[in-house]
Length: 334
Ligand SMILES: [Zn+2]
Image (cartoon, rainbow, N blue to C red; front, side):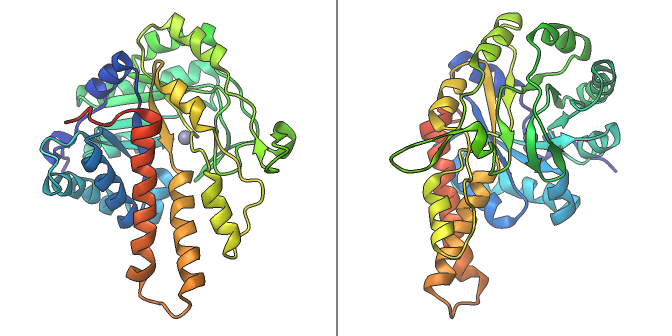
């Protein structure tokens, strides 16, 4: 028994990406695997009237249960309307689909967009796998994100020791032969809260904090020239806010030298053909910082609502900040 995302009030990425590329902004893709994260995402998107992509990874499906997550996304649309967002533009997207069967099962159960990540495969095999997913997805009006180039870092079950930048000379051939709707590229972003080793960074002499190497904007611009107007996606684009890291470390945590992508660079990328920016670690950090602080200050509390309320508020604040001050997607789904 399969269900179309259209029956659930979700949208695919086609229109939101076309508008984002033309308008010089990017759509936030926030990962979720629990209720508080989802509430915070919907509250932030509804308040700012920003189109939003709810991302579910393989790890999230394992953690929270795939069926439950899909009903939560359906509930998100109803909740958004209840919050006064008349025409919510919410996409339910599979992050890092690893096989045709995973993508098919998501499409059959209400996802409006899927990623097939064949980036670890030899080039021709990546094309064949992506093409197979595109054929099934497009028959159901579901959009497909593919990946070319390998990102370093760890995100749930996706991990790679080192990155391989996307080769601009391959993108036209890849996009044409696969028919994918968007392309995740590797230009120096990386998964997780430790995106760079201290050796890859310089150190700010005033604060002692690590300053990461800049993204490879030259590669991005070359890709844009090869595929004008084609939607580009950046994974691993959390900024790892140092105030959250400091809060965690001040309240019993231990995250030395956690470092992310500076927001100025993401702001610059948003103005280009980059139309989807993935943010996961920043939500984890915002939640953990608020919980650690709460427990430190209120050692007697044990009702989860007591510590999850500030955690949810802190995540929502972060999501609103990203939408309004980094991606520029506020007011685009009014
Ligand atoms: Zn990713």
